[in-house]
Image (tube, rainbow, N blue to C red; front, side):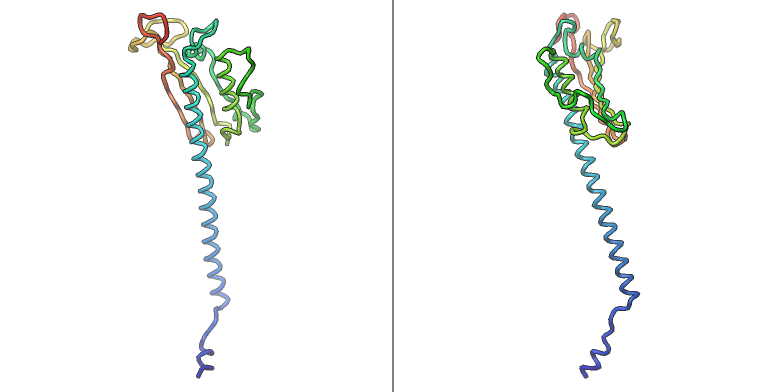
Length: 198
């Protein structure tokens, strides 16, 4: 009796084993692709977080130094109107950093304005802080001067309530230029009828 029961138990055929192996293989491939996608997604999210931090860093630097002046510029915003910042680390295929990369602190002879620009160049023109995926990635900062009255070197807009208004624009393009991060903020102003910046 026991012998007959054992004889009725059949094993797996070769075809069944191949089908089950194929199903398990497809499952593993799907899991590996999902893992790869999640790792890329985490890297992209990390780069966006760093871009947010760096745009805020530039804005805080400008606002904290807005009353600093030099012999040729009355305030930091006035200096930035004529000196645009453009990190070109992603412009070449090799993406080599500039000579200022990593040199956050310059010489003691430099003024505050040049020191801030050197700091941005050192941080934003270095792949160690924010990676480049392509040549379309941009890291720029520009300040626009808007005046109520017609003045040379100033965009006229009669609807503003101040005599002069400075607007800063930070732009960081990520993910081969597909994801853009902009930050517009007021860097300084001159109240109508007053001679000094407040």
